[in-house]
Image (cartoon, rainbow, N blue to C red; front, side, top):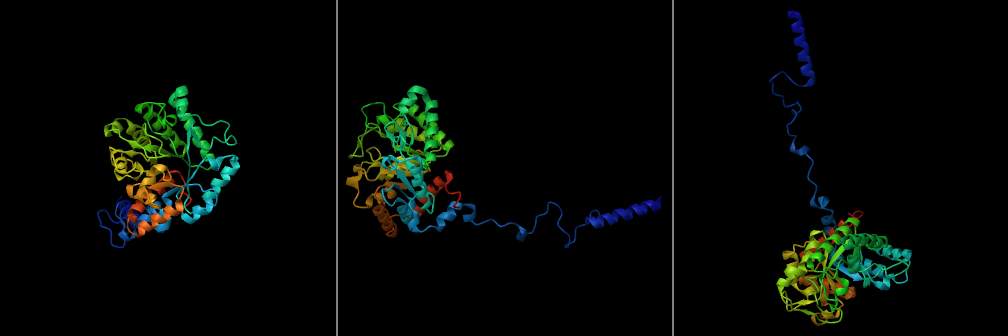
Length: 390
């Protein structure tokens, strides 16, 4: 019996030595591998990658020149001639197509235009259009592209409520994406219930709460389909005059905006809208000196009071409402100084040169330019435009 026990003990000891376990209770020697659960030496751990590798947008931003950054802040009207060349030369962030760019063209011709614009861009473009429905239909007004124009929000709401508006938003978004348009400058968030108001035909024609529900539904549907939305025209058009043709002064009290006009914008922001367009109205309760698009206080309200973190754009800088407030190429400079991230303009060569001069003269901080470019790039990333590039 003792012989069997002795033999068994020898076998156990040999197995322990072969497995590297050592005798029970013995501490491992310095040459042995660490026990399970022991930390590996620091030198063997995987190092944390640089910030640029963790954040592809940071890497792209760090690689850009000042000229390339400034170009990203311009959403320009598509030139009639040499559009692709301008995209490459000025490093444009976006191009917006108007009725003339769709007129009489076939689907293939429009797609050839948008594809050519994208091929010319080192950083993929935002390509936009105003396809609100009703009186503003840039693409569907062409019968070669769609048999019927997209109906006005008011007509849809009256016939089918929010369900009809959602269905329309989905169809409209798919239609535009098929043409190579990835941003629709919609929905209109303005509140108007008076048919005599300039903005009335473009609105839902309903009170604030109903308009807020409409905006939320449309933005959610646009996000689902994958097209960029633009809430307009902040801080709310109301019964103001047409800023395309002159100055419009809004003298309503701030409480009115808080209780009414801001509600649809807040709803759109909560729904995930990536961009807000600011009007050229002078809103006296916010800033008596400048139109909203050039007003720092208005932009602070949008950022702080409404909590918006996305891209803020101006309305078209060529509108007559700005003529008395700008001197030569100063419109874009004032717009960026006020807090806009992108400017809409038809005169991009003059405006871009003016902004570059302002950056060089330290009238615009390059850190501000970087912050705006980051927002623009994040918008592009959310639309899947940057995946091949970063």
